[in-house]
Image (cartoon, rainbow, N blue to C red; front, side):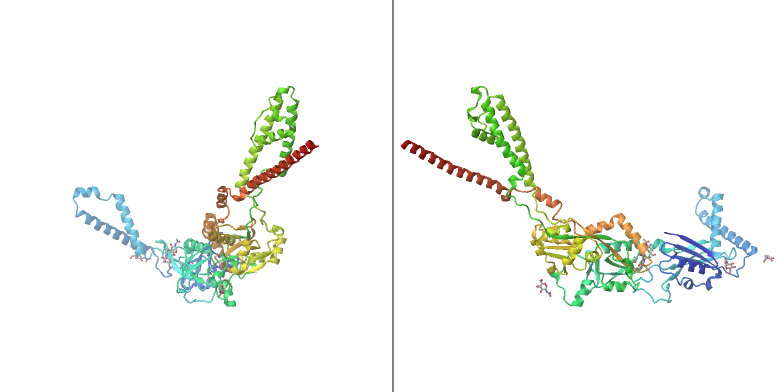
Length: 637
Ligand SMILES: *[C@@H]1O[C@H](CO)[C@@H](O)[C@H](O)[C@H]1NC(C)=O
Ligand SMILES: *[C@@H]1O[C@H](CO)[C@@H](O)[C@H](O)[C@H]1NC(C)=O
Ligand SMILES: *[C@@H]1O[C@H](CO)[C@@H](O)[C@H](O)[C@H]1NC(C)=O
Ligand SMILES: *[C@@H]1O[C@H](CO)[C@@H](O)[C@H](O)[C@H]1NC(C)=O
Ligand SMILES: *[C@@H]1O[C@H](CO)[C@@H](O)[C@H](O)[C@H]1NC(C)=O
Ligand SMILES: *[C@@H]1O[C@H](CO)[C@@H](O)[C@H](O)[C@H]1NC(C)=O
C-alpha cells in the first residue's frame, strides 16, 4: 500500500505524532510537510521526527523568505529596464561579430527575423533576471529530506557515532534544493530518494552461516569470505541488486561448530552426514539478530512458531519434504518365468481342453459313416491325444481327417492354438522386458509388514521430530518411538540400509544425495526412496523483530518466485530427482538381455521332459520284459 501525503498546517508536529501512532510512516508512504509559521532557522527536523522509525519517507519545505527585502514597483521597473538593456547590448555585440566577417549578401541570408530576435532578447532577459533579480519577490522555500533507510544497519566500518540518543539518531537530513517564484524548483536530488533508489547504494551488514546448499561460503587463508553462493545467497544478491545496496557478510558459527565446541569432539570429515538441515538455528545468529544491527540474517531457517520468536521470518523461500530410504526390493525369482504368462486356472483349462479335444476328435473320426473316411492314424484315443498335443505346438500334422466333421474339429483347434500361442508369446516378451519386484516399502504405514527391517533411524535436528508431537498420524508416532536419532555417518549406518535391515528418515533431497553418491561410487542402484513425501517444512530467512523492511523484502521474494528465479536456483543447487529412478532406470529395462535367470525355467522344463521320457522308457522296458515273460510262461504251459 503506497500513499502520498501533503501536509500544509501549522500543527505539523501533532500530525506527525498521530500518523506515527497509526503506523502511517513506513517504506511505502511519502510525506511532504510544509512548515508554516516558523522561519527555517528555528526549525529542527531532528526533534520533530524523534519518534519515527527507520524507513520513513519524510521531507520538509521550510520558509526561507527574506523578511526585510524591498519589494516595490520602482525596483521592479528599474530591474526590468536593466535586463532589457543588457539583453539588447548582448545581441548587438553578437550580431556585430558575425557581420564583420561575412559579406552583405550572406548577411541578408542568415540574419535573424523579427520573431527570432524577440525570443532571443527575452531569453537573455530571463537569464539576467535569474541571476540578478532582487526585488521581484523574495519568497523562497527550501526542501529538506530525511535519509533514513538502512541507517542503523549500514556497515559499521562507515558508521559514525550517533548524534542523538533517540529512535531517529541515525537519520540524516539533506538539503535537496529550493523553490523561488522566478527560478521554480531547483534541486540536485529527488524529494524522496528512497522510493526511487531504495537503499542508495549503502553497504549493509548481513549475517550468515555456512550451510550448503543454502549458504555456501568460501574463505581464503585469512578467514575472509571470498565467495558466497547457494540458494539463500542468490536471493541476497538479487535483493541487493533490486534494492540498490551492497553488503558485507558477517559469519556466525553454525550449530555443528557450536556442538563440536561444546563436546570438543573435533571435526571428523569422513563422519559428517551428507546434506543439510535448517531446523536448528544457531544460537549466535539469534543473539546477533536481536540488536537490529543487521539488515537480514541470510540463513535458511525452518519456519516454526513465528509468534514466539524474538525475530521475524520472511516469506518462505523453499518447502522441503521428508521421505525414507530402504533397500530396493529384489526381483521376483524368474525360474517360473515361462509359466508367468498364464494364470494357474488357465494352465488347468488348457490341460482340460487337450484332454477333452482328443476324445472328441476320436469320436468324430469313429462316427464317420464311410469306412474309407476314417483315418487310421486317429483310430485310438492315444494317437488322437498325441495329434492334438502336436498341433498345440504347431507340429506333427501328418494326417488330416478326410471327413468334413473331423476337419472342422481340427480346424477350430488350430484357431484355438493360434490364439493360445500368440497370447503366450506376447506375454512372455512382456514378462521378460519388465521384471517384477517383490513388494517394497512405498508408504510408511506398510512398515509393519516388513519384519526384516529391524532398525529405524531418524536424522538429528529434524523438524519431523517436532512435527510428530502435534500430529495425529499413528505411524509417525510409532516410528519416532522406535527410532534411533543419528548425528554422524557412522550412526547413520547406510550399509545396514543396503542390507535391508534398516530404514532412515531424512529430507528427500538429502536421501537423493546419498543415492546419487552411491550410484557414482558403485554404479548400481541399491536404494529405494519412499513413494510418500510427508511433513512440509517451510524454510525462510530471518529479519530482526520490527524490521521496517520486512514487507519490502517479502515483496521482492514474491516477485522472484513469480519470475521463476527461486525455482531455478533450487534446480542449480539441490540434487536432481535421482539417477536411480526415472528415465535412466527405464533405459536399463528396455535394454534387458535374456540371461540365465530368465532361461532357467525353460531348461528345467527340458530336463523334466527328459526325466519323464527316461522314466517312461524304463516303464516300457519293464512292460516288455513282463509281457515277454508272460508269453513264455503261457508257451511253456
Ligand atoms: C514566510 O516568511 C515570511 C518572512 O518571515 C513571512 O512574511 C511569510 O508570511 C511566511 N510565509 C508563510 C506561508 O508562512
Ligand atoms: C520611485 O522613484 C522616483 C524617482 O526616482 C521617486 O521620486 C519616488 O519617490 C520613488 N517611489 C518610491 C515608492 O520609492
Ligand atoms: C543507487 O543509489 C545511488 C545513490 O543514490 C544512485 O546514484 C543510483 O542511481 C541508484 N541505482 C539504482 C539502480 O537505483
Ligand atoms: C555502489 O557502491 C559500491 C561500493 O560501495 C561502488 O563500487 C559502486 O560504484 C557504487 N555504485 C553506484 C551506482 O554508486
Ligand atoms: C574419524 O573417523 C574414522 C573412521 O570412522 C575413525 O577411524 C577415526 O578414529 C575418527 N577420528 C576422530 C578424531 O574421531
Ligand atoms: C514479527 O514478530 C513479532 C513477534 O514475534 C510478531 O508479533 C509480529 O506480528 C511479526 N511481524 C510480522 C509482520 O509478521
